Amino acid sequence: MSYSKESPTMRKHVILKLSRGWRFVKPFFNQPHSLFKKYRLGIYITKKFKVAMGCAIPYKLCFSLPFLGVNMSYKKDAIKGIYFPEHPLLKIAPNNEQYFAAQVVMQGWESIFDPHIYVHHIVRNGLSKSPRNDIEKELIRLMFIKLLQEYNQTHT
Image 1: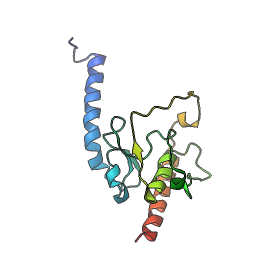
Image 2: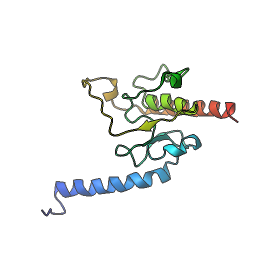
Image 3: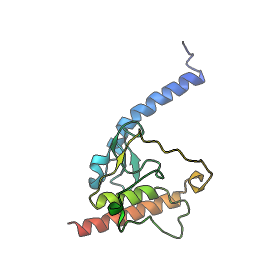
Image 4: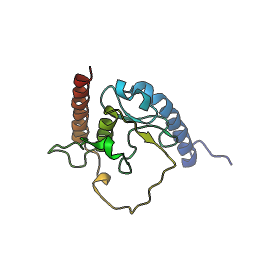
């Protein structure tokens, strides 16, 4: 089968190839925070306190903070004293699952992503379908900074 350079199929193919290549280069630009170095193939917190995605997601088993969040499980002991971020301006709370999981990792537990585990559920419209809010993303980033600074003060 052949395609002209202008065909939509060819454009999609080129974009797909470029995005696959970018997955391998991206972690060099979004370097993981020192606590999340072994998470660099999955979802991790960067040195700039943002959430980034490594090249193994969503294809391979790897150390990772939650991917797309809601389908996660933890041992009861791992989540003692763990909380979701709260702030009056947070409505959709982007990356709140990663914030939650970062605390679990900071307590010495590990978090993995397994692409072979499926969860079947009813799809409903909800807040997670809302457009991302830049103010909320920045609030979460500031909360990550505070969280990791507090961790560094108690563990140095």
